[in-house]
Each structure stands twice: as structure tokens, then as C-alpha cells.
Image (cartoon, rainbow, N blue to C red):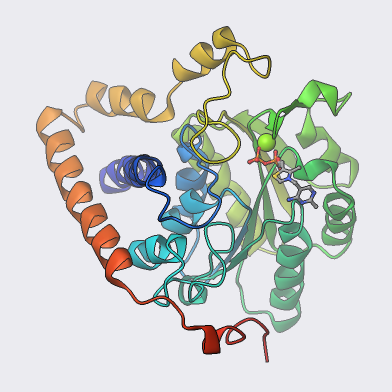
Length: 321
Ligand SMILES: Cc1ncc(C[n+]2csc(CCOP(=O)(O)OP(=O)(O)O)c2C)c(N)n1
Ligand SMILES: [Mg+2]
């Protein structure tokens, strides 16, 4: 990977982290009128995959998709305005955090229906195959979505039809508060995909270099007509399932487990790596954070100053025509 791309990956992760930290800080004022699911701790997956997607490749996500939206090139101002349910939001203030869309950069939608985006992304991959438009679809979902029938039906169909789709399972080991070993006997979800005849790998989703290398190869295969491909990316969310709640140590997940994963921070690890090869230092860190802080401040000012949809516009943009 060239040096510019390597530092760009770092920027993408830090930007996602800083945006979500600001969302968390603002949430207590109760002006963000939408449930939020933060990806803090999981930034390397979206960054490592999206760096290899082209602007017009398709992406589908879930209730926890701020990271993917930003990494794929979605507009930050429009995302924050969507959280405030403003007319200027990326879904015109109708969708909120769980229903982000930015068709201009291939983000056709994120969905709160767990597993709901998997057949949608399989469908765009089928369309691309029929139209021979050369596009790849990346579908992001959690370990909980692998429990859904849509996961199994979609994988079987995509394999049969050799569809250009990259399935990205962000395995953060929990579906709300239900740990994976209470839901699955075989904890290797990548192996499930192999059962459908789909090449797959279980990788360290907190190592952006590993994610990026695997995603590059996988997207390349899809583009050559050798899809689908499946990546299971092991990672961990730092915040509670929803909102800004702390769910550590109250019977849901242990302090030891949480501390272990904090020690595996994808951003800190990658910064240390970039520093060790002379690509990063304190001055670059300071400049980056200042630039991103200013951008975030602008986005929040834009969102809060934006008009709300009026009641007579209620049904606009709700149905596709
Ligand atoms: C079809 C469906 N069933 C149940 C829910 C309730 N629900 C919301 S998030 C969630 C857990 C999802 O876990 P996972 O897919 O691992 O994603 P994560 O939240 O860990 O990112 C559930 C069960 C839902 N939104 N949709
Ligand atoms: Mg999960």
C-alpha cells in the first residue's frame, strides 16, 4: 500500500471515532431525536473495506452504520442533520441514524431490520451481474444477523449465481446483550459461509492492515466475476448496544473482557505502527485532530441550524415511486 493510502486509512478511523465521540457527547441534550448505535472500537472494519470500494460500488449497512457511511464517502453534514431529523439530512430527516442513505456514493441504504440488508445487497449484486456494470456490492452486518434466515437464503443464492458481493460480518460477539456462545454452537461464522460454497476468512477486524489486505483481494475477486466472498471480522464495541449507556460489569459483559478489548484499540495500534515506520508523529496527529474538529463543529452547526420537515411534508420521500 502506498504511504498516502496508509495515512488516509488512519485519518478515516480517527474521523469516525471523533464524530461518534461528539455524537455521544451531544446525546445527553436530547436534541438528537433518534436512537443511535455507536461503532467506537470497530472503526478498522469500515475503513479497511471501504478504502477498496469505488465511489459507484454499492454499500448496505445496519443500525450501526455511521462508520460505513463515513468511510464510503457519505457527507458528514448530511449525516449529522439526519440524526437531528432535519430536512437537510441524508434521508430528508425521515430515517434517523439507522436509515442513512447516500446514493451519490453508492450507499443505497442502512436498515434497522437485523439481516434485512443482506438480501438487498444480494439483489444489487444480481442486478450488476445481469447488467454487467462491473460494480461490487459490500454488505455489512453483525454476528446477530447471521442468525437470521435472510443471511442463509442470501448466501445460498449468491453462491449459486456467482454474484459480485462481499459479505462483511462485523463480529463484535454480541447481539444486544446476548453473547455469541449463547446463540451459536459453531463460533466460526466464516465456516458457515464455506458451507454454502463461498470462499471466506475469519480475520482480526481490529487490524486495519489485515482488513484492508483481505478486502482488496476479496473485492478484486468479485470484480473478476469470482464472487461472492465472505469476511468475518472479529472486533468489539466499546459502548453499550444502544445510545451512550455503559453496560460493563452489570452482569452483561465482564470488566476483564472489556479491558482486554480496550487494549486492542484499532486506532492506537495503527498509530503506533505508523510511527514505527516513520509515517506519523505528534505534529501530524495534532494537525489531523484540529482539522477534523473544525469539520465536525461545522457539521453540528449546520445540522442544528437546519429546518425541520413541516407536518404537511410528512409523506414525502417515504415511498419510492
Ligand atoms: C429482524 C429484527 N429482529 C430483532 C431486532 C432487534 N435488534 C436490534 S439490534 C439487534 C442485535 C443485532 O446484533 P448484531 O447483528 O450482532 O449487530 P450489533 O448490534 O452487534 O452491531 C437486535 C436483535 C431487529 N431490529 N430486527
Ligand atoms: Mg453483534
